[in-house]
Image 1 (cartoon, rainbow, N blue to C red):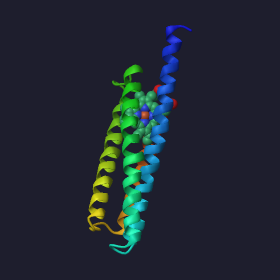
Image 2: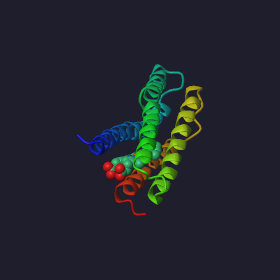
Image 3: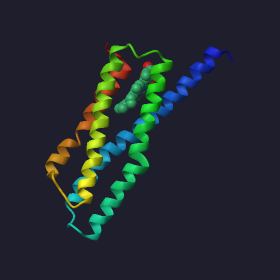
Image 4: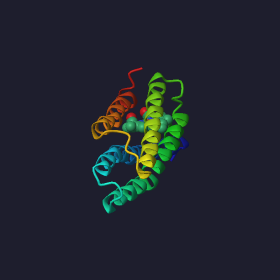
Length: 149
Ligand code: HEM
């Protein structure tokens, strides 16, 4: 096997890892605000509320945050090996991914408020917020696959 094909194969494996953790990250970003909606429908201080706090904590610490970190590590590696840093589609994608990471941080912070007994957002507002990762994912996938610029 030549060095070129070893590099090519390595690149494909890293890309597979990238997409696997993208799926874990985005799936948990879809789930968390849903959990918050159910959480907010539970009686404050009830056993049910405590269960939601526990589920939210596990989803964030076991799946969502590690997946986000791995998506970043694999993505940066792909951009470096593939010499994509100067491409317009990657800059646009990075802007969207940075916003999505900000959304992630916002949702984690919201969970801390909920765990303290605060419920600042309405169920409708949370349901609307839940649309953000779907829209961002659609735009990001078009950018990385179609590479329109
Ligand atoms: C965290 C920062 C990220 C960076 C730096 C990054 C960078 C990259 C790069 C350089 C590629 C390889 C493109 C190619 O080989 O043509 C790639 C592939 C891909 N990325 Fe990302 N990415 C990031 C996050 C994301 C996110 C959040 C999503 C989805 C929501 C995503 C979805 C994909 C998909 C589906 C592919 C495979 C495309 C293909 O096979 O042509 N990436 N990414």
